[in-house]
Amino acid sequence: MTHPTCCYYKETVLRRIVVNDFLTLQNGVEMNCVPGINVIIGENGTGKSTLMKLIYAVRTSFDTEVYGMAHGQMSLFVPFIDKNYDGVEHLPLRQYFDADDESTSDVWLMRGELAKGSRYDYCREAHIDDDKAVLYFDVLGADNDETHSAVFIPEKDILSHSKGLLALNTKRSIPFDKTYIDLLSSAELGRIREIPTYMIDLMKKLAQVTGGEVVYQNDQFYMKKANGQLIPFSYEASGLKRFGLLWQLIQNGQIQSGNVLFWDEPDNSLNPMLMSKLAEILMELSRHQIQIFIATHNETLARCMALHCKDGDSLMFHAMYRDEQQMIRISSAPSFEQLDPNSLTGARVKLYDAEMAKAFGYV
Amino acid sequence: MYEPIIESGMRFDNADAWRIEKSALYTSLQKGNDGLKVVEFIRVKDGNYIFVEAKSSFPNLHNPDSKENVEKNINIILNKFVHSLSMLSSVHLRVNDVPETEMPDAFYQLSKPSIHFVLVLHFPEGTESICEEIRTVFTTKLSKELMRIWRAKVWVMNEHQAQKMGLVLTHLI
Image (cartoon, rainbow over all chains, first blue to last red; front, side, top):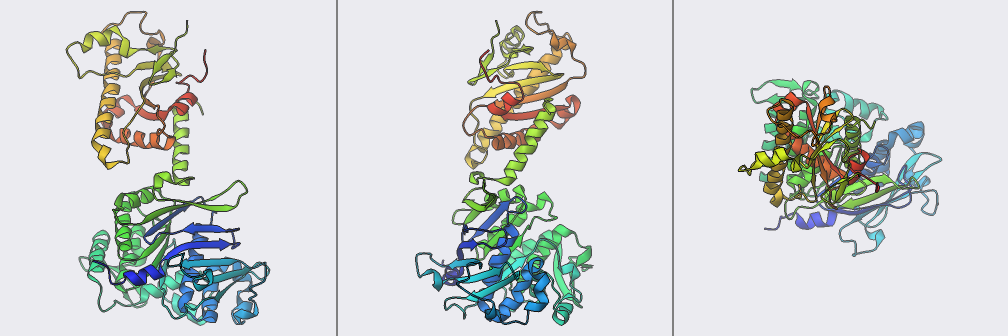
């Protein structure tokens, strides 16, 4: 049976991403994505988080006024715009935008079938001006009316620090990484009226891992255990918070069919014994038309993804690396073993070689 | 004349090596006992006992259909390691004898040796990464008690790695 959101899904899925000259990503960094799960690996400094944040920023800008979006999403890259943040936020975006300026960068987000339509039918551009260190976006094409929701889960926990943070941000417009603010805003939302059956099943699986459900009250998140005990999020085990967060975002409809989930290092603080469960749940989400991008340094998680991949699932591994000229490149493969270069197995093999050399007296 | 040990298409250094698989002791013990299997040879090297088994093929770890075959291969090789260690111990305990010329003097001169079980793979798919994965499986299958008693370590390496560790010869001698 065809899933009712299938058509919508096909139209909104990210198929190809091309980035030119954006921070560390220079000269045509290109990634061909699958509709299911895209696992991004690479050494530190190869731009995994930057790429995901950039896609998220442009992606979430589709349903936002261009000025408002630029204002809001600028802080995604706060380390790079902090210096000029106060001076820029009130200025009209178009004052700085010049499509013919060679110093600007392009980000094309290709949606739907690549063969259909021209590049400008399906793209949006993001620009960064090195001199002013400000990120610009502009709309191209006629896609402004559609809603394209996305969730970005940064590597660190923010739910433990919820009390007063959003209010402070609203009042003071603090230059805080926007992904954390966005996530907190999403997590605070209440339960949706009708949760699809398949999501309820997933929530049960998540609740089994955490031993309870997430509760939001008095501006704070708690884990309500099966015995009724309320544990503040700050006291909950870090690994279990990851599952609790996912539960919360499903129950309030932030993660649902047609959305894109970006998750930076979901393996953070997670015991390897739980990697398989996490991979199983992510694969299950992808089967319900949720496109997923994760960046990881964890080989166990990457391999668990492949383990839980069934016929009909789509899973792609992407390796971000520096070539001989130190330019960032992306190579992709449908299986973890075929990925080349592979920084995760490379590190493991290097360690194994060193252990062997020590054992045999060749250090 | 120096003659390397040729196994699975590789040329192994035979310095201080006891070819246990070709030994008179193994031949006599094996009579009427098909279950007794041993490694190709044992070497004394840099204070270590190195038990070497060579193979020119190994089932694909990532193929679910090969799971039984992987287990079977691992069990056979682990038995070879364990039986070889038992045989060597039986000689040192004087339960069994070997001719003086068969076992190198170095075997009687070690003090507090380390025990290394080494599987050397020689086939195109035997990358360093695959070797490490196979080794992980071996480590989980090897008896914890045995590893504790003997402080034994297991290694899986390809020809290139075995050359680096000084087990396989790189040039004609």
